[in-house]
Length: 610
Image (tube, rainbow, N blue to C red; front, side):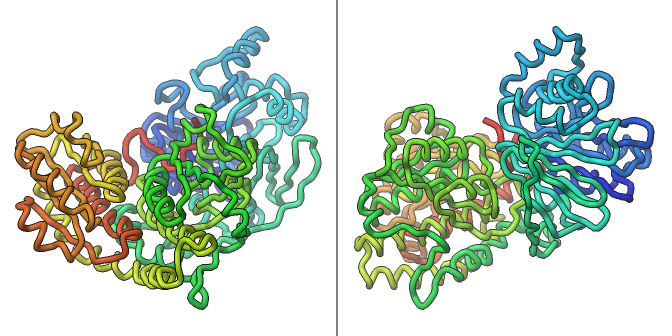
């Protein structure tokens, strides 16, 4: 959530900041602003609303000249969206300007301290406390003042700072919130994420916890909080720049849905060598796996739904108890974890605050940790005992699609790998699953080629007020994700239920015209699911049945209103196929409703606050 961009060089800063912020719009925001040193003082321009409002206000940067500056898109946490609460926030005299992602947890006590010292606050934000503290501690050295501030503030933060007295430098620091440094020729940058600066440089440094970067035109120096120099090695970003562009699609979400065959292939293919799964640098031994008495899976949102799928798959194939937890609840329920516990954490960004906190708690209690993440060098990746990268490429739309699919692919490979070590998957099934993995991208492509069928369904049902998803076993796990996709981008109220639970309450909500999406891909449970379909049909529901091709005639006989069949696959991997029509349905419904699909209201891509 929120976006930071900073620049120091010889070019005009504001157009560069605005372009960079545009590339970060996917992160979610409600206001935008810039601060630039204009040759005599810091000039700040900010406004509530979309970035285009700011661009019009300052005539695309012409009204805010200067060659060093910081920009921000804010997602409100402290204080409602407003011009005053927008970032950058400035100190009382205007000497310091600060942009901030994250939350300063002890800001109230610090604010009271500063008010007692004579400071006057104008905003409701926690960020203004940082600007005011910098001015309070400033005695001629920005870095000395910043170190004193870091010793006082608590919470998660990525900070970009400029000072009127020191216009030859741009300062940055991070803790539990991502921030990168872009390395140029005679110019340097800070940013929340790579797309913001990809058109200017491909060489970056990733700031680690409590590292302070001091940027000038000539170079970048990085220090710890003891003011000791830290050597950094540049990382080259080899994405094709088109990976972060729409490429002719109307929305990033549409592009990313269509990229899923390639993303799955890129995740799976390099890890199958000579008919065996090779999982990067995972060093788990058979003895260690045998000694684990339970597995915890911890994640948030869409990644949590991957975990629910994983629970069914891993318990069946590894014969070990698996618990899946929402990360925001996990560490507050005193989980029973010790050195006989394996904790698997899943996060697209690798910076999800609740998931990172759960990882740290698990390690503190002695657990072995494995992470599945997309972003190389992210906090969760760096702090895990083992890390598996999904290699999905940049995902820009807030609603996750290809990250979900590649996380599922990693779950399949990890399960097969561990089942082979434990001896719970025999050689015949092992080879069968390898073949199914290899075939997965093509089967996903077959579904995408039938997207017009889903578009037709969406055109008939996009005015639905309430939608219910039902399924059993893995189909129930899939229904959770289908429901989330629909509600987060179309704003239609939707719920997912284990189909057998309908009679225990939810069926009271079914009335004439209610859309029920029934997932029935698990062949062994098909008849039971169809009994639930009859229950909702008897109460007036409109039913979309989603099953496998082998059941096409069977589902038609059940008189569902719509049907869609995915290709046959092994039961373990059917979720990767069933999710595709659900993603497409959510997308087309939201499009027909005129929703802001890539930037749904109130949501952010990377949630780096609790």
